[in-house]
Image (cartoon, rainbow, N blue to C red; front, side, top):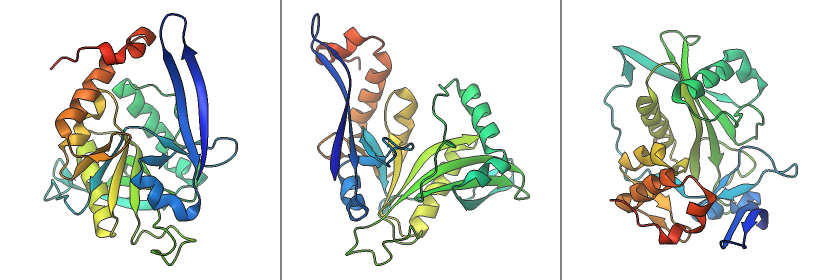
Amino acid sequence: MELLFDHTLGKQEQQDLVICRPMAIVDQDEEAEALDKGWLALDHPVLGREVFYQSRSTRINLDLYRSRYKEHTYNGEEIGYKIIDASEMVKLLSLPSIYRQYMKRKNFGADYDPFGHYHKRDQFMVFYIGTADNIVGFTKQKKYRWQEENYSTIDTYDSKDLAGVESVIHANTIPISDITLDMEIDWAHNNYVSYFYMGSGYETSSEYKANYRGFEWWTGTQWSTNKKEYRRLCRRDSRIDSLRDLGNLSLIRDKT
């Protein structure tokens, strides 16, 4: 593993603040170890290579998870899904249009393009109602392998017996996010995946992740199951709106 550090910004005249993004180039046989230390693959290359990043990563221990829905339906109609390898072909399914509409509806910043780069670990889970061309949502996912001594087909990202599957970005045209996330987790569990990763856990929009049985979050040194502390940190994130707040973060008295 080769470490990279993007020293983005610093303040030292009026406050002591350093903003630095740690990244890593991870070898194929190091993926499971990297996951265990909180690293996840960035969705766009840096210096022409795939890199992993550090954050308050979140995941579900699939040994503890139980499905939240007896049926995956919307207004009485069954929601189906299909798995598609990531390529330019997904644009023919109008997924970029679904994504733009979703981001606008949720009032999220749209500075991230899930269709800008595809890695061989990437796949899309596409959700539909009725016929397969009636697409109502999608999720971009990343697959992570076991280390070579534990995983005989190291040159592939076969869906069976993976160290982890990550849900990178989800979008839909109807309110089915909770249902389709349950479908994603079920798929991972049925394919013998060990952990289901849900990306970073920041701000109040990420509090829902702690609602799932088997939830864990990366503190920077260990995976924690303390949901109360996780939710507290998410709420604190949303209260920070200036560099001065960030620089004096340890002095902020968190509200209960």
